[in-house]
Length: 131
Image (cartoon, rainbow, N blue to C red; front, side, top):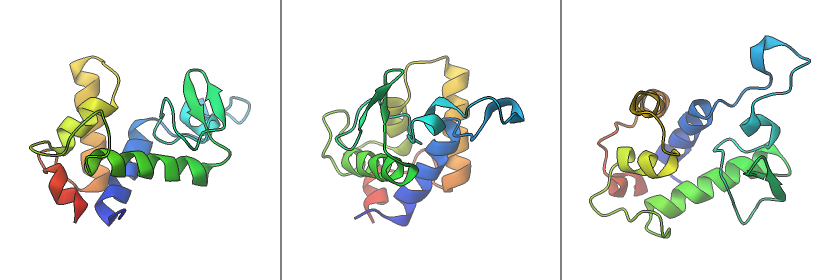
């Protein structure tokens, strides 16, 4: 089941990934990569993707892209992913798997955004997100 907490985490990831209709507030510049690809989670691959653009999954529309993000989060949180198992893991651990290796400050900013939007603390066990 996709819980409200998982939905809110997805919204936090969407913002942290830079989902913007256009960059620099100019209509002549297309939106961010996640926006152009209808991929709010900047997923690299998904069984629901049409194709790839710029090494990221491309979806038919925003609704399918959000469904793919929720599906991927649900799989990771419920132990159905080879990337992380929920036992003893927290939201912070999930995001560490999610986010490509980056500078520590950038990663902490990402976690701060997800935590603020979802109202789920970084030390929340993944097993608590299943409820």
